[in-house]
Length: 189
Length: 189
Image 1 (cartoon, each protein chain N blue to C red):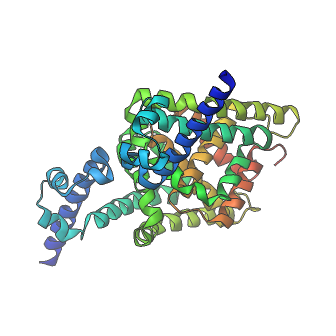
Image 2 (image 1 turned 180 degrees about the vertical axis):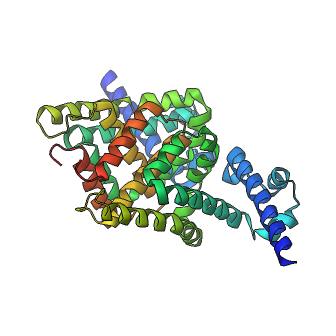
Image 3 (image 1 turned 60 degrees about the horizontal axis):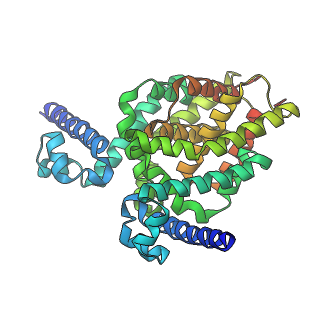
């Protein structure tokens, strides 16, 4: 019965990812030891690393989950909507901090960076598709190449993650800032 | 001879800050132990902590140095020029990573966050003064309040720091992105 087995596999992986996310959020990347990952997931290290080869793989799987969720929102609402959602969901803050803590690793470890970039490819794809749709519908500035529009929105997203993760997000001001960001890429601003 | 004494004091403090900056850059915030700070500065812990009360104070003094340098550039060239300079100076990358590593601390430690905010007040002041001058000269959009323009530029700066610090800065693309940022806040775009 491969169907049942697939369901079980998916449920087990979801259990691992949920626990690992909480664990990274609470203890940071370095502090998420194997012992703590066992406690947070309720599974043995054998079970965890049967599904995810090592801590890096687990971390990158979480980054991929993020990218997929963001891609779903970006596909229909655009990347600015992703950012508005982040601003409205304080529960994400702990995990977002972990994303900053891995900066040194991203810079110095090429393999890790390659894995990270690969995981965000789906989000990039969703944003580019959305940009093209918006351009075709006459809602987006035509005078800026897509890779620059993408780079701009992505840079603002990184800024927002840094701001929220360090608890320096003033909602009222940032909402107006995101309006300006949206206005900057729209046609006829 | 208070003059000589002042010079000596300034030189000693510069020696400590330069060494500490290299030490934080190489080892990160947590890894910059007292022993390593002694090695990097060439001074004893007694001498170091005579001038800077503790590691936090030292770190915040470095943040203040950054803010002052940025404020000098921002006062005459604007914050986008500060960002262009960052993009052109790869030597800053190591230190910038440390700025991300303290995100959790900023979020959870109110006193530390207050110190951090206080250190960047000078930069905020310089940017606001520049914005007002640019508005008076008719070079800046009039329809966006200054605090939103400031919030926008500051958010992009945070994004750029995150990007550079994690080694994900594609110079060619980011140069065009900064052009778009500048264009977004200028009059008649």
